[in-house]
Image (cartoon, rainbow, N blue to C red; front, side, top):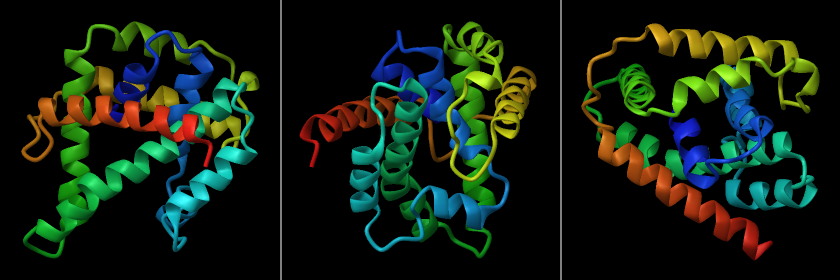
Amino acid sequence: MIHFQTAYEFDSNADLLFYIGNLVPDALDEWQAKDATHFRDVPDRAAALVELMHKTDLSDPFAYGILFHLYTDMLWDEGYMYPHRKEYKGDNWFKDYRNEIKCGGSLLFHKSEWVQSLWQKMTEVSEKDYGETPGTDAKTAFEYLVRTYNWHVGSNEPLPKSFDEKILHEFAKGAAESFKTFIERKI
């Protein structure tokens, strides 16, 4: 949901395939595969994203959405995930971190008026219209999109302790602006 909020901040009138592309990189269940497709396992993640940008057809909204997702994750990881891990007291930082993400996502889903109708429209787009999703296939990506939407509809999570609504909105706005600069610079 944080990805969705950030994409909406970036372009509230974007093509549905942009929004879908922005969500489906997380359709992978295996963390090692997700780390590889998100460039978490390379020495210079920013350089890998610049290289991907140069290879991406930016006129393809699905591919553009995937690039946006990966860039946003880099910013989130550096700004929130890594500090959370460092500051967390105890060995189970990841479980606590994922719970905070879940609670924050639920909060955004239920507090944003535009979310449900837009997400519903995304679930009506045929998986045949999807582009290539790194590490998975269109059917799995579509199932992830529908499953995540249904989870959010039924979610009733407590408020997050670490990532309150203000932090999430500030991140979304900042990441959207940062991505605009990233694309414009064409490093």
